[in-house]
Image 1 (tube, rainbow, N blue to C red):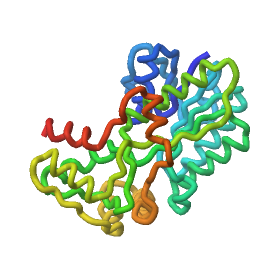
Image 2 (image 1 turned 120 degrees about the horizontal axis):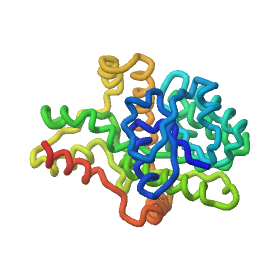
Image 3 (image 1 turned 180 degrees about the vertical axis):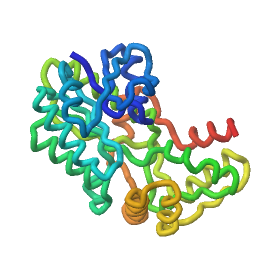
Length: 289
């Protein structure tokens, strides 16, 4: 029996794979093109796609625990439903699913609404699952570091309510711990939700101040113009995704991404160390700039 990681070559999935290998797990990875996967030795790559029923049936054979990561896509919910139905058909009971924090609050944001629907499916289909609900990834801001460095502006419209930003490496390690906890349990464990957050609640002004300290010069917060944010994203992403991201940003402004009581302590206990902070991230970027 083995753990199958779907979405193994992305930022989060690769961290999950690395953490599982570090812990001596027997794992396989579902990838579209094994020749380009570039995964560590010891990982069995299986060619497949979450919309390809035949490849999923083959990939799920002999799997005991599944890590399910559906990328943000127009058919994200369909991909998840196909995977869950075929997982049940294959007798897979143990699942770790990557959702998102406040999936039940950001109800008008397409990829949040899709993930919340998958959460309901996991419950109603009777899966023994851990539902991971991460906040905004610190690592997302690699995409704007050049703007920060060259123009002195932090451009993400993250608002004034605050986001408990999480490092994707911490998320990958939490996912690996949960996969192994379920895999090694003598009986399937009950469904559980875990908010995966960082140690600090940060506003746009807070993040700009962190960059200012790290770089030794003033970095300004670019403000909360979500319409301009969408328009800029349209230069790099499909229009549906640009709108999705704008809708998410608008919920940042109203609701923030706030942890529940005890979340940080729970994660610190799981990892046995402090959570990585945005200050750590900015300092790493500044040191290499």
